Image (cartoon, rainbow, N blue to C red; front, side, top):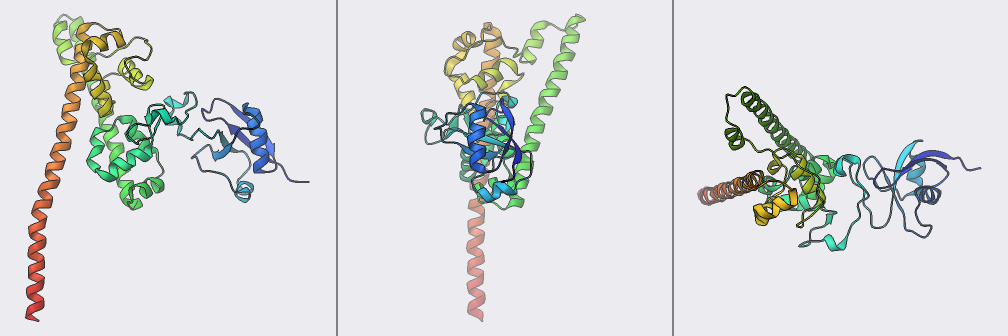
Length: 312
């Protein structure tokens, strides 16, 4: 009699999870698919829930320890880290051909880390234009996989991921500092020592109300705009451009806010976008200067080498 292996299976959103006892990989697909409500004729693939490793070798399956947790995927579903799925509570993500823009694959509005890695390989300065969600997705990628995508050594890739983490930490520290300042100014206002208009000029209040997705914004972008303080630091360059392009009147309707608060938000997004573009231009200018100065030095080194060979 074939030995049974205890294991767990879940769907792509991790909202359904069942315990099974199976004897083979094929039986795992069959019984797991049935438990998760998959169609018997559906094409199912198996990955490790922890890191998305594809499990297709039967011998490898038998070598895995008991109570390993697997994720069963339809043909149009992909594994994602729990941090990339709205804090681990989102609905299943599916790859959609209609969401492909300029050859870049998206997953329900979230750009895959492969395309982000491609951007970095072409221009490392593009880090400045990435949102916090983009940076977090690159940090969450296993170092070996990201190194292969960037054609970097693992040591260099680890340094890059550490740098990205420090960038995120600094952004969070900035938000906390602004929040402390907001609380201080609010306390001063309550004591009657600060004009409320002065507080509005110093701070961006971005408390939101519940509205449906509109004006082409994804649900994730709307959530950031409505529920996060200082959302301009969390949005990607493209999302900032969209806010600025829509303008105050459209954003008032989308967010359900008054003119003053919406105008402050749009201005903050425009300022953040301008700041990022200036950083990119500065990096590109510095890179061009380094290339121009290194070329004469290389020529001098070549001439010196030729003279040395001639004297010999």
